[in-house]
Image (cartoon, rainbow, N blue to C red):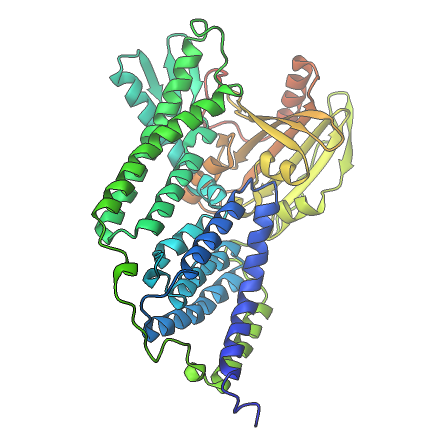
Length: 502
């Protein structure tokens, strides 16, 4: 009973419960920063958020408000409900998003908007959201739509410039040159980088709601225009390659240089937007007379010991609940791979622990086999959001150095990669995604997009690997043998020619 009368037991139990809830999503988030499969810059964003928080909180407090502290504590408690859904549904991103609410609550508790070096706590929380693997989420969910938008915008710019360009979907034909606006050129990373820049500026200048909406619209417009300009410059470089001294604009460092140039041009108007708002902003709180209140500190009795212990017990129960994801499907049978392909007999292989987690968890089926120097991996699923992963994710996670080469044409399009394993061997990786309705695509994002339009449709990933120095005719023969042996449904659509991808 003496323990229950301790006024600090309630707040201590509250903090411990919140730490329990935050542990799993925080560990998952740190793993995404360190896992090369995510190719995430989230660690730098988290350090930027922490640095800004310390920079502001270390300055003198101008005014304090106990109500804002109570609101901050209430938000910390609210995240428990969010993490309950994230834990029960097995959605790591949902639990990690609650960390952004925690950042907002901590900003309120520290009064970062009422300091000599003020910050907007809401914008600081939005800044932390960019520490999540947003690029993968956008690529998988909206990548195909962004790809279509980028192609349409680039075609419009070229037509406005008088270029004789014929556009059909993501395909552009200019004179004899036919190119594809590929998924990596959808502008997802450029959009996120510009949004990150705009949110960082907003954290510092604290715009009004109207000003913030204007800044967001400006950012979206500049991201679309900048990515379209990048595609236009790449297309011009391909068409007029001879006039440019036979420079391959799709090779490094030219490809990245063009991307950095258009990104810098897109960021210029955002700097002007921030400069205009900074000049018109009211004097900072540091010029106001400082005040103090008797309620500046956190009241120890704000949470009673019994309520704190009950909350701690609830948190312990939440983290012990087994996940029940919504998109779990009935376990798919392991795909049957052919016993022979050409002159090579199958040598069944084992999936790595990482591949088991990627491909078979929550109901997917996967199998791999070697056929002489070639390899075949087939994944079947009715939940592509869970089970379909591009080679740059899986192979990079296994330590490979992976470089995307583009997309092959023909009735069975494939995404092509060059991979170097940890032993130094180089491989040519080709992957296609096929639905039971006869839809063929070279990218996960399009497969997910089409699956969302017809949920329940079965999809297969067919990944072929060959030594990099293998003769092209032999590789083509192996691919043809794979298509004949697997007896996949015929393509419902086709790309007429083999085309370079931007």
